[in-house]
Amino acid sequence: MPEAAGMRLELRRSFVMVDQMEVPAGSPDPGPPLRRVAVTGVVVNPYAGQGFVADLSASISASEAVGRELSAMAVAAMGPHAVESYGKGAVVGLAGEQEHANAMLTTIFAEPLRAAVGGGLAWLPSFTKRGAPGTMIDVPLAHKDALYVRSHYDGMTLMLPDAPQADEVALIIVIANRGRIDARVGGLAAKDISRRDGLR
Image (cartoon, rainbow, N blue to C red; front, top):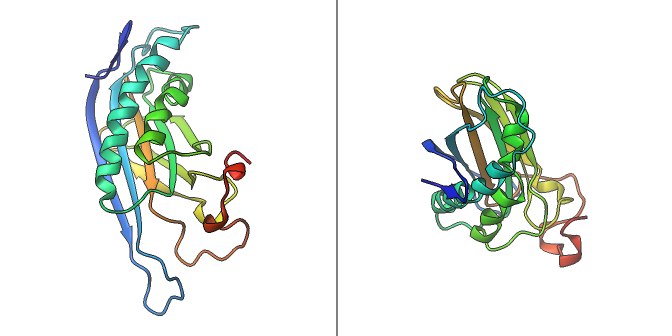
C-alpha cells in the first residue's frame, strides 16, 4: 500500500481508461491517432467525518506514493506513444471536504508523473469537486512543457462506477500523446517550445 511517514493512504481500487481517436479520412492532420489515458486511484480519506482538520500535511506527503503508482499505470497504458500533455483531478466523497482532495493533488503527488513522462516544465492543470458515487468530472489537459500551446487544451470526462464512497477520494491522472486532431487556432506550436516557455 502507498505509505508515508505518519500516514498511509489505503488504495482500495484503481481504474484505467484508454480513449483513442483516429484521424478522420480526408483530414489534413498529419499526426498519429489521439490517445488519451486516465488512471484513477480510489483511496480512503483519512479525514472523512472528522469535521475541520487544520493540518493536512500528512496526506500531502502520503500522496507521493499514490502519484508514483498511478503515473506508472498511466504511462504503461499509453503504450508506444510519447506523452505530450497531462492533467490531474479528484472527486472527494461527501463525508469529506474539497480541500482534502486538493491536499492530495499538490506538487508532491505530481512530481512522479513528471518523472514518468520524461520531465515536464509546465504546471499540471487540475480540477476537484465533492460528489457521490457515479459523479462525472472533466479533467483538463495542457502541454507538459508550455501552458500556452493552444492545440493541447483538451481533457477527459470521467464517470467513476461506485466511487467515491463517502469516506473515499478518487485521485485522477490524465495524459495524452498529442494535441487535438485538426487543431487550428494558432498560438505557440508544440514544435516551437523552448525551455523559457515552460511556465509562461
